[in-house]
Length: 413
Image (cartoon, rainbow, N blue to C red; front, side):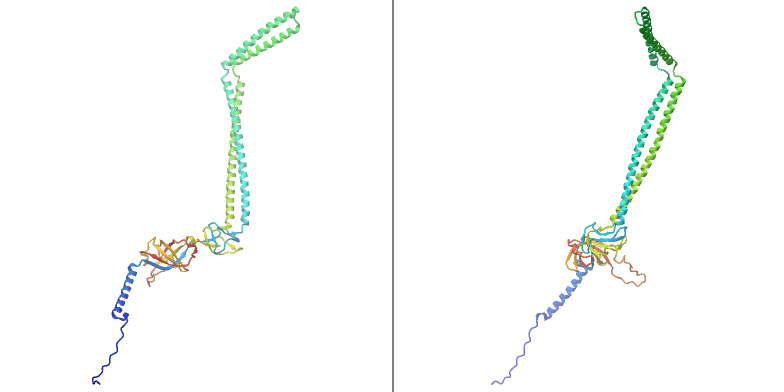
């Protein structure tokens, strides 16, 4: 056996995992620090989004109420959750008294129409009678004035020539009648002709002599001119005709009276028409209609309830016109611009797209019921929130609910 001592072998250490090496640890810590620094720098200067969870769904909401009319609910035509169109009757009020008032005003309107027709007929008749009387009186006056002027002017040359010609013709006939009487007398005395023939001839001679006397008198009258009594008579006729014309002109006063009566009747008709329109409006208002189209959110009345003017009976929301009302911190509002794209996360589930529509020019607390007053001196700065309005671009607005919360993410870069 050998006298040399035997050496025992030292145990070997297992190798360390790679993540426990000092270099790896240092690299990891450096990467983590760099990530935190980069994230902080991105958040401070380069973040592309503005977030807020202070947002909710808003929509036009109408509180349907009777306008200027109180009454008892006769019937409710809609139910909660029902979709209605603009102008839909949602509630009917008892309209018995309104219908009675409408029937009374309709009867008064027909009566006023009859009065207008009667007044118009009387006016037309009065105008016609006045025109006829005036025209007749004027014609009589013209004739009387013409006769008076002729009486004043005296006989004309042609009248004198005609009278003298008539006298010469009468004298010629008288000479012939005298000759016939002489011949008839001779024949009767000789017995050649009966006595009756001489009587006939004598009668003709007397008639011819009378004609001569009349023609001579006419000639003398024409030469003498108009007598004073005839002139006065002609002048009296003129005065009488003027009086009749004045009476006819006075009838124009009756025309004015009839016209005033027509005006009064027309005013009554206008008043009756206005009363009828008001009564019809009252009847129409018993049918309470919605102005908006949308979903019935709530019914506030039941049949038989009594409502007052302006009392809300039905609440309707137009979800097709919904938008998002959000409040953004004033520190981020400078990055917002109208038209920026927005992603909307609905708490109930789902996402919508939209864009910034309106950015308010005041803070949300400016118009609060009790605005903050820091005049006491213990002022603490609080980050204010600025209201914005986000238009919803998605088409599925009808599935939203008024007032439900959403989270918005606005892309600013």
